[in-house]
Length: 558
Image 1 (tube, rainbow, N blue to C red):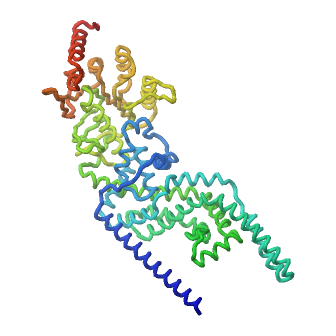
Image 2: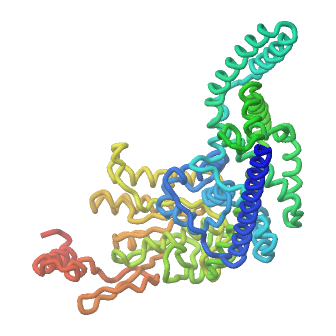
Image 3: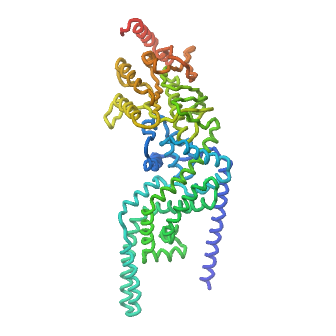
């Protein structure tokens, strides 16, 4: 009687704790939903470690075809930071797809129109947006590895068979049968079989446990897509049809999956059902058998998993783009022209907190001059980033934007390659050569951005080689936006490059910049004056000014 009372009390406590946890989970989800409504356009705080960025890129690595933003251009423009600024996604699938979009700008106007329809739908229908975001949040992430890493790791297991497990099951049944014929022999045989099965169980369990995580994410993906279909969102009718067809192929994968995917599996749980199941797993290898069956299903339907991840990731990314627009009201939807033109009003850099906006209206190459820190490099990056955003997420940081579609390449923030043994000059000429090679390929026109051509060599050879390279980086299939300190280039190339410049003002030993681009070449030289402003000795400044004046007058150094 006492045992029954104790069991009843224990069951009651477990029931109360379960109800309490259920209420807490529901309240937590309600708070999350409220934030999704009230904080639309507020960037969620996320931690980005190097290994996370490595995993985020793996969808892109698996699906990269045709033109893509290469590593040099990506790093020149600090696109990792641009990605982080717009990463409003809720799932790893969405995160990886958004990254893929930025690395592979589109040249397909119909695809952009479809994207725009989804972005606009979720911006205008908050209930449907939040419903999807809740589902994507439950799908969640995959830790420091991409789901594509896990799928690759599954291949490392090689071919697996349940033959040995079925033999162990037969031996268990035989030992039970022997019990009815000869009890002592049956007990001894059963003990031997049980010990053998348990020992082999833990050995194999240790081998497969690291791979169960991939099944957990796939399982969440299947459940999430099933619930997404139940929402019956009109804008996702095409996507739901494809998801539905893919889901049908995973019936065997889901059937009996609790044997492997149960949260209480082999966790020393105090739950009676979990304890019983654990003993059955150890003796009959039920979860090991299910693992091999699920592995077979995953391998047969990897393309369907990829298709589901792509669709889910794309929807999550479209919602994120809408949130990015909400958080950046000074944006516009780009227009595209068949001509090689770039026309933008109040264009600005998305990473600068209080940016100075500039206009650009060009149908050819330009050469920008001006002193250090005057805004040349920032302007080049502003244009380059916005061209990528226009074709990647159909969004620009400007009042208006109309341009052709371009393959974007750059050579800007290069460094010596110490490990590779290349000097700065070698790194430069390799970076420029890849742009020259890109323009020879078929496809959309090339728009390239070059900051300080060949700064890693002497003046005479730099100007001569730079002039010829810049001549090559323009034409019917290429536009080049370049910045330089070499005023000589503005004269050499004035027939084929339009000159622009940035200015600074020096008053009372202080310098200020407007960061506004102006027509024509720079007419002032203030590099030496800056030495005085920064506190250099007067003799250094005066002697430097005299040397520069003598050179300009005589054409030789004294």
